[in-house]
Image (cartoon, rainbow, N blue to C red; front, top):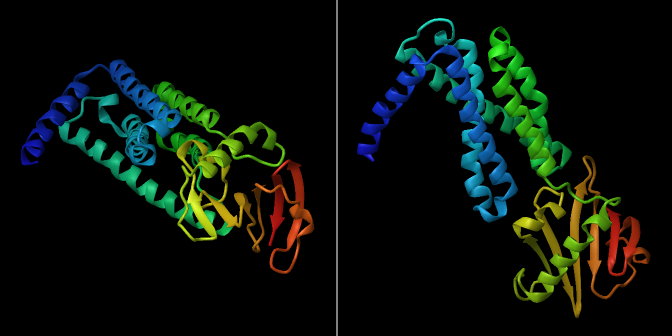
Length: 288
């Protein structure tokens, strides 16, 4: 570990020295190329996240991605080497400032997001996260690099295009209108529940279970879990879609292995406000 620390400073010094000695246009090209690499890595991890360690690995690549996004606006707006030669100490200061800004932004953004999700009773999603970034990022870029924006057009465009591609590759949570589109995935979940691949605690009537990664988008509620109820020989699976911002109403899809019509089973213990039968064994409901 100490050897790594001893080598880290000389390596960084060499990299920063070479960057400092590059012509202005070459610096823009180099930082755009590095950003392109991070953008490609981000897309690869997003598309294949279920095969690449899912959220554990994604955290680090996303964090590196965001730090670099914060680095290049800082670089173009404050780096004296853009207009005149700068010292190595100044280069280190810029990198450190970029990292601290990224950490500060992530903390503030996380606090704001957690409070908002708690009030709205929504689950964190890639669509929400990157949609917010896509809205806020141009504002930040304009404020940060407005004096050097022409130099930042290429990396800025790479960032925006990457975020749009991320949004296009993220599967949307099913709604009442799109149920038929996702019915095959719902049936696959039912099949793995019946086969025992999704395990529930023995002897427990109602269980909350996390779905396998590739099916997790079928649940829109914050905990990303399905509810499995076992009554005699009947399996009842509830896929929560949404929680009301105010009150205790929740919306979702219900699978019943016995195909019993739940629309006539409203009572004080289960006061359904609305139930629709979608097809055999499948219902959509709003309940208190």
